[in-house]
Each structure stands twice: as C-alpha cells, then as structure tokens.
Image (tube, rainbow, N blue to C red; front, side):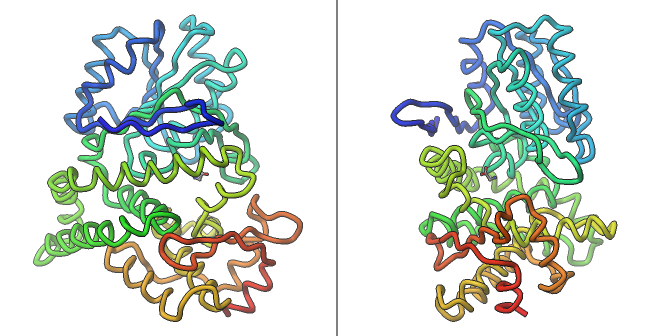
Length: 377
Ligand code: GLY
C-alpha cells in the first residue's frame, strides 16, 4: 500500500491510498460507524473489481444510492436529491458518505456532504483515471450553474481517496485519454522524471490501439481497448501514484488556490475555451483532447515570450500526438479569446495563464487575452 498525505500546517487533512486490489477498502471503512454510499449507476457491473467493490459494500449492509451521472445532471438539483436521500435514511452528524464514480460523482457527493447538516465526513473511490489523478484529490467539490462549469462549490477535504487502478479495466478510450492528459499535465507541472517514461507507456498503448484497428473497423479497436488497457494497468499504477503525489504536494502548500494551486490549470484556460465553443456548436470535444491542445498553446505562448527554449512546444506537441491525445484545433486563437475572458478564472481583465518553461517547471503569468492573441495569431 502506498499512502500519500495532504497536510495543512503539520496536520494530515486527507489521505490518498493506492492499492492494487479493492479488498483493503474494507479496513479503511472500519473506523466509521455509519457509511452511506452514493455510486454512479454505471459502475456496479463495469468490471470484476467494481463488482467486488459492490459486493463488499453489500456485505457491510451500507445503504446505497445510485446516481445517473452526466454533465447536465451535475446540478444543485442532484445535490439536493443526495441530501434528501441522506435525510430519508437517517444519516446523522457521524455519517461517512462514500462516493464511488468519476469526477462528476465525487464533485457532487463531496458538495452534498459538505452542505448536509453543515458538513459531514466523506470519502472517495474514484473509478476513472481523471478522478484518480486529479478530480478526487484536493477537496474541490461542486456543480455547474448559470451555464458555467463548477460555478457553485466548496473546498473541503475527503477523509480519504482510495485509488485502485484495477477499476479502470473497462474504462472507455475517451475517458482514459481525459485522465492521461491530466496525468501528463501533472508531470509537466512538477515531475520531469516521470514525464518521459509516462509518455513512452501511453504511446505504446496508443500503438497497440492503432494496431488493433488495422484490418478492422475503428469500433473494433474501441471494443478491444479495455483488453489492451487491462494488460498494462500494473505499469500505469506507479504513474497514477506519482501524479497523485504531485497534486497532494501542491494542495498541501496552497489548499485554497491563492497562488501555486493555479498551476494545476495548465492547459485549461485554452482547453475550457475550446470545450465551451465546441459545446455551443453542438460539436463536443473530449476533455482530454481540449486540455492537450491547451497545453500545446501554453507551450507556444511560453516559447514566444522567450520563457521556454525554441522547439519546446513542438516537442510537447509530438509527445501528446504520439499518445493519440492531439486533434487538430477546431478554433483559431481569436475565436478562443472571447471565451477565455469569460472563464471564471479571469480577474481584472487579466487571465492567470500557466506557462511551462520546461518539463517540471511552470510559472503563472497574468496576461490579457489581447496580449495572448498578439503573441499567437
Ligand atoms: N483540478 C484542479 C485543482 O484541483 O485545483
């Protein structure tokens, strides 16, 4: 078992437990007298590890609520449904609410738990790569509101986040790529040692995916993907743990995002703009692809500002491309500018851009979107 802690001053405020199997979750739940589970309805029958998890929770006799999860349902109404269910089931101040699912589930359940009876304890079993390396770590909870993502929410730490890569066995390709982008983002921010071997593994997985498609249909290789992934999961585990460790460190130093935590938004200012424009045009783009494109733009910006060495952006671009994370940008820089200014992270006309000077070295640089357009157009 790998345990990674998140600290506030010298006190542990949240634990991240990385385990090969799901069994050890039982011991993690032992200290809590009253556990309430809220689970993504798709998870229970997803793969053997998820089935084992459901059986374990059944054996414990904990009440369970199944959630229909989607970006549209990531709303205050669903949070109120969760609170209503907790109330109906007699959840008290000593309750532990356990969220099992991807980032949408953990965000909503964490938010509900931080409101219910002025806040009860909660914990996560993330079932997507994105949630394991990012969303389920660091205490950001929330729902979409007023047309903006995560506009309502809290920062409140889970008791623990139980990471078991085996539950990723049946993760679809697009969902995997969203997590892979965030994992590489984390290494670009602060882990030069893991970046290159992680790119290598992801590129090998991508090659196996392409090889499966040869002589077959694209949907055949999509079907084949879980098999390709499950055979290499044990090689992925150390990278998941390393990314979780980087994030835990950043959050320990800046839990409430006064400064350093903003670095975790690398690639997201452009990425969110791309996602928002695509959504408006009913032509949604995967989060992983949007963030990967965003990281290439951020690297180009850093290079054009003289912060990164010449060729750096091309290197990042090639690396992401080798992992099948890059698609052609559907929008020009000018088109993205307006959407960027509207991002909730824009303050006083300036946007906090996260710029990579090299792998493992990023800085936060405040710029107007006009300055960005001038540098990139
Ligand atoms: N996903 C960015 C953060 O947790 O700060």
